[in-house]
Amino acid sequence: MATRASLSSGFERVTSLRQNLGLIAVSLIAAAGPHTPAAAQEAAVPADPAASASLDEPDLVRGRRAYQRNCAVCHGPRGEGGLGPPMRGIGSRLSADEITRQLKTPRGVMPRLYPSPIDERLLVDLRAWLLQLP
Ligand code: HEC
Image (tube, rainbow, N blue to C red; front, top):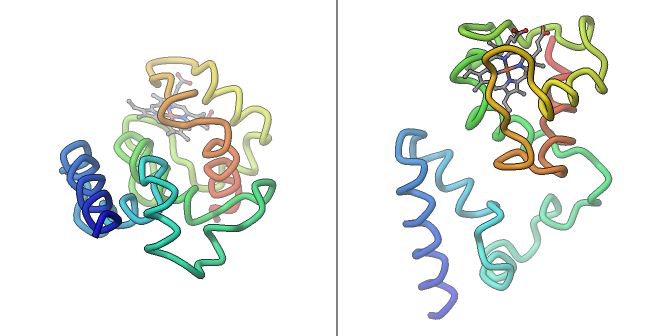
């Protein structure tokens, strides 16, 4: 009962922040987001291998989600570009370090999204996801 209540209040909080992102994204955030209380998360996803994955390994699913939430508005939902340059093929133009630098100290009109909402861990996931774009 307590688990259910804290999960749903977390869900409402996230929903109000992310209203424009659609239910699927929101429920993924509620299930795996950093704001979900650890106890509730364990109860909700007892045997999710992704939840206990090594911290060292980039998580491409989290990377893609972080991109959709924070970057797609300027770089295109499929990385095709928009206000910002395309992210497709970024791995052949920029190194991992250059991508990191652009996130931590952006050139141009790109906003600084590090260390929040893109923290050190999400940066690793996001960068790995960007680098595997075709
Ligand atoms: C408000 C729009 C906006 C958002 C949001 C944004 N960017 Fe950018 N981004 C830009 C613009 C504009 C540039 C080009 C900057 C310049 O060189 O003047 C850029 C440049 C970049 C570059 C360098 C591209 C290249 O070819 O040199 C990378 C990598 C990048 N952005 C990644 C991201 C990631 C990852 C996110 C999400 C965490 C993000 N951006 C969010 C607008 C944005």
